[in-house]
Length: 416
View 1: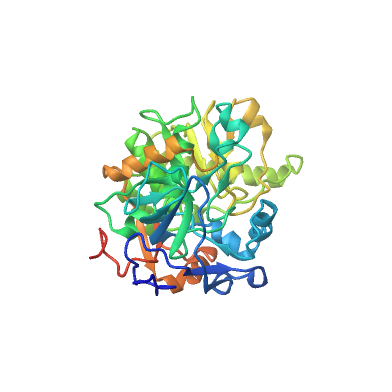
View 2: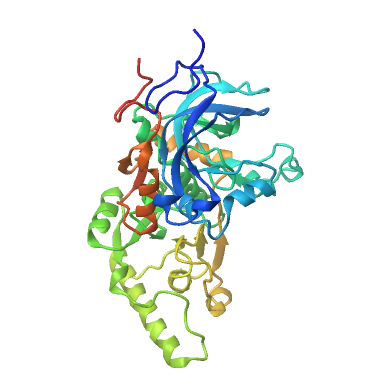
């Protein structure tokens, strides 16, 4: 019997049977704006594989802030960026976390076979990149891109194409939706906390974690605890604080009790600067209360950026590190340089992870050390709504997931 041209959402093709077309949640330039309007289900061709690539039937996907940006078309028009990189596709398929089943392998792929159950990480790069060939860290290479954001053909579609090295074994004690959500945030957190020696989490280190109840924070708390550190979460309400405590946080700080957020005043504006400094000192005292002693964080785990960086650098311990991977509250963060040079603090950027770090995090998921933290599950046609909630700050604690090809929630294997 000839293969069908397309299968409906939740109607799984026989393993290894690749139809000509698929359904995908698609963003186009003329729809840039509110995420609930930017994403639309469209029928598109299944992507073709290049050497080293793999076609994965997506069972479930994770929701991340990068595709809020993609939907808005700001700060980057991702479609124009794809086209500058040589992909003429006039649309964007987002999604940077996936669980699924290998349905086809491209030329040269020997590490995977049709039928393998995998999760995918989002780091893509050229194997011919001279930087990588010279021994450089692939995720810092000029060719490095984030699949499902800087590159299209992500996980909000029945099929996605990835490079073979992105595929990792799936934790089979989890459901498809649970195994789909941890990797982007978890591997990012793992690199932030272990990838910048000598500032790696050591026994007894206090680690301040902004957005502790979100995706990044949920995994940062668990990783810090696993490594012997003392995680302290920053949250927006006490319910989220309790959630962080259940994950292993020593304590939490409710940021709504403080008002000094944003770029700090100029140091020559003495009155305004002193008012900001009083707020930062009060936050520091709340941190000590959460720790249970006057001990500053050796590592501050930051991602809001503009609102939080001045306070992060202020409260970080002498010779400690503020490590940052995003700027969800804005990009123009200000720094009082005196705290950096006189207290010899480090301000370190960090971006996703390499294969070694992604696989190390995945092993923590497989052995049950790290919980997936799935907070809310959406249907395929609700992808835009999920991103709208994230855009508006109405997302739940933990990670949001989307059921894509799995016929129903709760499955842990290929349905027969």
